[in-house]
Image: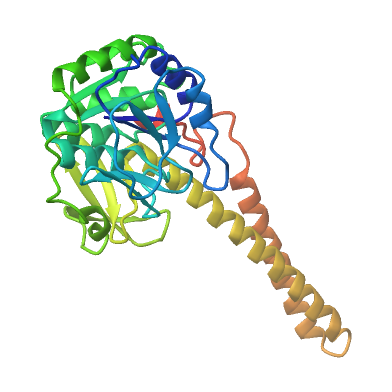
Length: 329
């Protein structure tokens, strides 16, 4: 089974694992969004709240019943053939590790025995992965959005799949997970190995779906629209993937970065033109005047960009759309 979380997820995870029985007949994979350069302390934090063994996942190790595996920073955690795979593949929803790749791999490997749990977090990571588990006949459990510190991920999952098998508080999800695990039997039985390598090769293929006019915020390549029922996602040829709301946020960050780059280029050009004009001095007055005029124009354009980068307290800001606003409607 796989648990996904982001903002506010540490508290939800500690509440959940505290109520997992020591004899849980399943292996548990956990993905929490963490910065690539940080050191994740999630494993020791969770270990203080459960009798189950908790460890940072390692490449190629077999999944063991009654153990919790935490995704390390900057690596997607997937499963194949009863073993863990850690990959530095394309980011999904702006994150690595991301929840969707883990849940998709569980759906492929375990089918109706797969269990997806979506906890507190921003944006929509985990929604399409939960849908894959649902379509494989597996179980989807979701933290109650009213209890979640950040409700976007649970709300997005519920919108995508329509109805979860259970919506509970984080503490109530522990016994619910135990009940599902007992009903399923040992999760590690009847492992499918027919899809080994699928996720590594996926980025070599042109994405399915209709091409769009949008560019990938990560690599600037074209994006293809991918629909799963009512859910809409986007993927580029490289393999970067976005839910609709995460694309809104990531695109906003890319626009802001482009504007800062343009501002730097214009101010740098103004300084160069001013130096060239000054060097001409009185010997070439027309050249000096042209350089000074062009420098002034560059600074005027730079001022427009500075104004565009400023906040707009009187209305919506093109680059400051929050996850909740992106998902609204």
